[in-house]
Image (cartoon, rainbow, N blue to C red; front, top):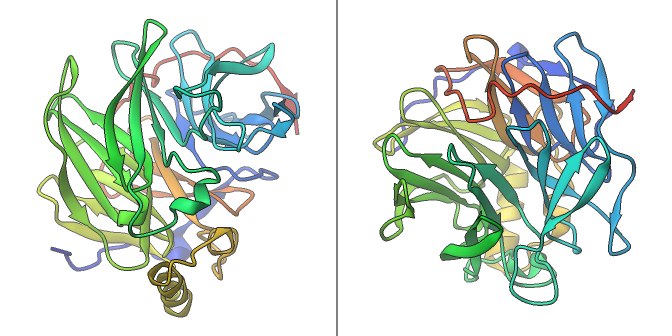
Length: 333
């Protein structure tokens, strides 16, 4: 069930930062600093005073420039990066640079990794959207070969598979659910979660409207989710019972219809993600709560060079990285 829209207007948006390339994923810490993925250079830090730093040099892996997607902050102030380039793998970033942390696959070739996060015990969770190479072969309604993996004590195991282009996940140990964004299923699914990990069978949680390709999900303080959708360029608030409402939209119906038609015909490709007819939400892909009261949202996006910011419809949760202190390093720009 979809509730009536109670959204913000695009005119209320502010923008944070400048000069970024593919700032797909965002995270925030209690100091007020924001971190976002940055194509080929790992991560950009936007400090509370407005200063900005590239945290790595131009970096290649296996001769291929890295394409950071999801990012995670560890308790020691260093980062993990989901590398969605063809070189794939999970990367580690610190003041010394970027290196391969784990291949995240069982074969010789590392798969492109979409997202990474850490739970309160320090286990590393990651997603692989598809086992196909190139992954654009999975831009289909009938391909479901994505998976979720866990790395614990250096050992990797797949905990959930058969997913419809796995994107971001959310771990809600309080309510006992692992939420999964299945982009080409245009839905969020969930599976029971215990302290030991995934503990049950996957079920559909919410199906989003046509054109809404869910990319990023983040937990709020009331047991709901904020869902960021590329193509339709919308943010939804998902309630704990699966109902949802639109909180921000720049939907362009002609564009959405064209992309849906391409998906129906099995002809969806990079052109449908590398372009958008919007001016404010440039393929909005993720969100993070920030501010002392966790009452604002900062949004990642695929095509912009800055980060949209808006007042949140509800406060967020403190994630495991919230209180981490990150030493200052990098190149100011």
